[in-house]
Amino acid sequence: MKKSILILFILCSQIINATWLTTFEDAKKMSLATNKFMIVDFWANWCGPCKKMDRDSWSDADVNLILENYIQVKIDIDSDRELANKYGINSIPNMFIMDGNG
Image (cartoon, rainbow, N blue to C red; front, side, top):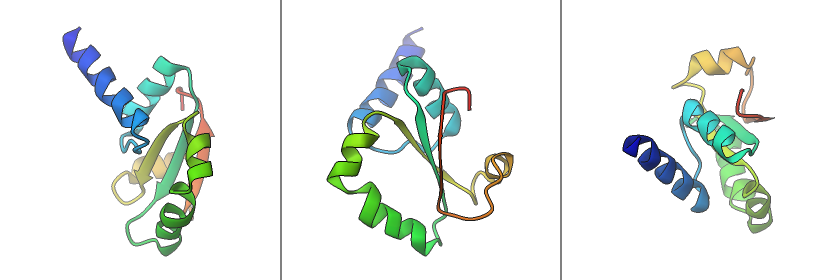
């Protein structure tokens, strides 16, 4: 029980600090616990347009106000190919809005 509370606290503090989660399962749990939709950003380290999104869009103050209403998760398609395939990701950047059930 203490471990679950600690994990939930860490995840909540990440969201409060507007950082992106990097684990889809953690984001799903947080989404269900907070009753918020997830915004899932499929990206890759080598992707120029993804870096531009980070620099120009995701860091924008107005966008961050909107993002507060979502559980934010970034999925590196190179690290999590199985999840990218599950959602039919053929090009990046690619964003989904979904509930905690995926």
